[in-house]
Length: 254
Image 1 (cartoon, rainbow, N blue to C red):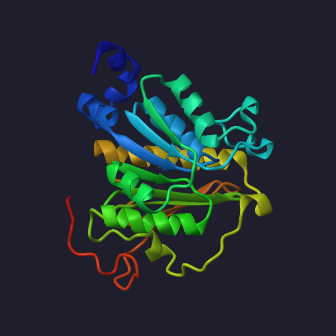
Image 2 (image 1 turned 90 degrees about the vertical axis):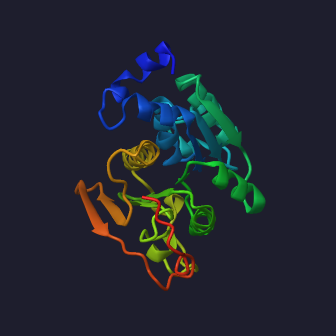
Image 3 (image 1 turned 45 degrees about the vertical axis):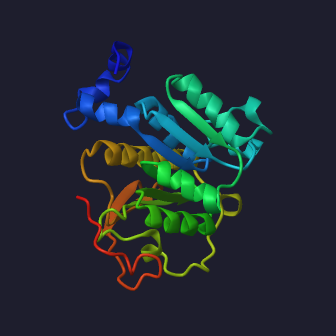
């Protein structure tokens, strides 16, 4: 870490739970963010600002005018552009010393396996159950922590699924029925600041995972109701009969 970096990240370094050692962990880290929409925008921006050394961002969609109400990593000039490319430009403008790899196609199969295995943490900012279930399975197989969230209308939920800890549930423990169909923001709407709140929390969870600071949302589900501005944390236990993680052996690295 050079003097410019010490100055740039000085407010984080002052935190006793981070310090120079924690900041160096961030600089050395690689994070995969899937989805550069409402959640991925604030998540990626705060991770870049915090000094995560390499961000791999993935989105196969293009910027639409209806995205701009909440997807703050994009601008009006980005309409029609690949979301991955648009986000990369904004993130590099925010912090030119962060390496940003933009993937403008849908990650699946071997490509997804490779990217998850290389990452220190994966952030699920997708908008559909199919992608979330697929990410969950690969993160389990690679033992890569997964920070997953969803937001619609005025409500949101978030948890951290970390298969390095044997008692930690996985995403399918929360949703055992893979045939479930979720509501969409296009059909139901979503309040713009809500995704900013949730994406910021996803970034905070990721930073905690990398630095070892505090207690991540392992085994807990955070529920947010922005209309009443209430936050509720409920215990989420691992399902021993879970089709995805039920056969997991003892691999607790804590």
